[in-house]
Length: 98
Image (cartoon, rainbow, N blue to C red; front, side, top):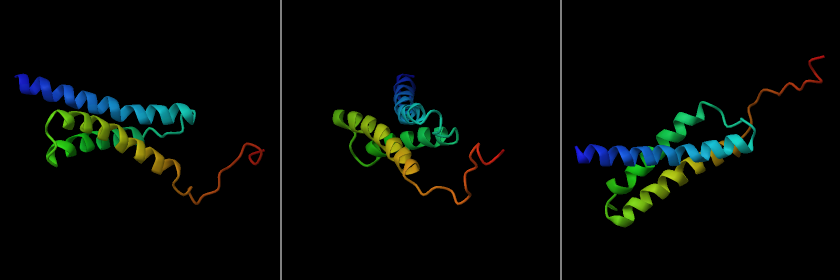
């Protein structure tokens, strides 16, 4: 029972840390982060957080490294989305619709 509580707290912390980069990017771009990126950021945070103990760092420092990885991985994902090439279709401005 204590193991389940312990693991659920880890998953909750990783999910919260994965939500923060998406929230910051969404606020900074006035909602242009994309709702489809939210589950991807959360999944990336959980995978990055799980990767640290699976790769061998399972001591006290590994806890902090997993939290850092759960924050950095979605941040890099959102940065890659921000600096990716734009779509090939031209954007329609309000002046062109008149």
